[in-house]
Image (cartoon, rainbow, N blue to C red):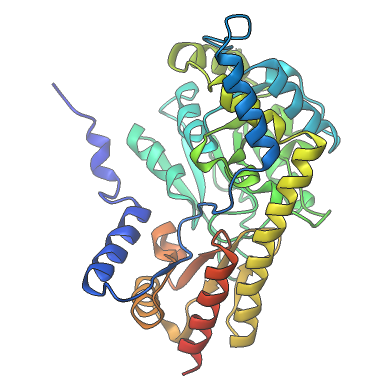
Length: 394
């Protein structure tokens, strides 16, 4: 037996596992300290009432022979895909139902989509970056190149025609930096991908936080994207489904390479390796797109936006540079006093008992930066902000 030797090329510890280990070790030594966590991007508000009612209704359906559901369609039930289709249509994007695939979350599909691509493809990802993009490709032995996201370019790298890539990852609004591309900038990426014959894997997990009309909430708002892009989205941040698990992936039928159709390939892959998202969960997800559901989830999103503003306002008072905080639930700050990322992590944990995420864990260009999230409770966010401000003004 031979095991996959490519696992030697990835870090032994996943970034957030390292954060948890360090936090746990400190808590064990200091049981009297109250630790406030603004690190991992997990939501804290419960599911919207409209979603809860739909979940309960679906459970009732499963209790009766006439409404019981067994295996569902590999691409998702039509009632949910029609709701997603309507959500895009409201933003001027026309999609076919057979271009929409329901998933158990964007993270899963961002890794699984690689099944339809050759291992010989060259991968281009921004640095800093969500670690899953890099790790899943290195597990398969692909060559990974990096586009530099820096303070100088606002953490929004643009295409370099000297770099030849086959698969390009874009996350906007970005995790971890909170930076977001406008439509003109995305058009440059689309033109670059089409010229190279490359594909863009567009992570739109945080699109619901965009409030600026100049920013795209979907790459398919950009002309030419349907011939070069696949889009991934999630209900995790949109509607609090982090523990419920549901998302969707859009694979245009016009995405064709070497005589092969990516849409048909993805359906075939799903039919082979995926049995679909549970009926109950899909009924809850469909409720998100109802008039009542939209009203309720936007109330929750506003709650997190207020938390983001609390953190951003604190950075402004302290004179600390940052990106995000608007159009994003993340605040990506420059570590004060020239500290390194993990140095600032320990300083904040020990001095204020506040946990964030070291930027160095997202790539070389993340060194010297730090991520805080707005997904905590309002109470925790206010207390954490007060502690941070007190620590950094002493």
